[in-house]
Image 1 (cartoon, rainbow, N blue to C red):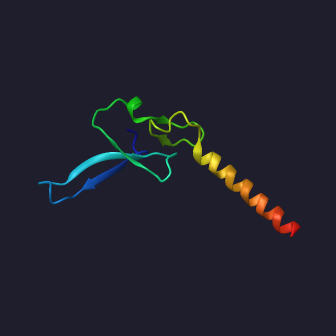
Image 2: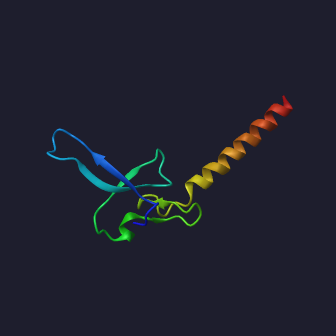
Image 3: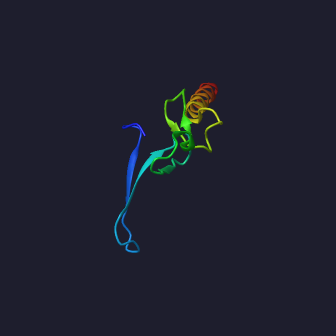
Length: 90
């Protein structure tokens, strides 16, 4: 994975003889945010993809759903405008 778009996890558990470590990425569209493990030497296409709207990595589950963060921002703006109209009327 490209540096800057990835994370790193270390799991320390008494059940393991040594800490387990792996690369990770956070899906930009999952809610709640989901951390996904990156297998060593995996094909980048197996990770999901890159959203061209928000430029975030997305998991395979969210790949074909459109840009959720952008849609949520629009929904918030619409809700704020509706609340403001309601307050002005009342």
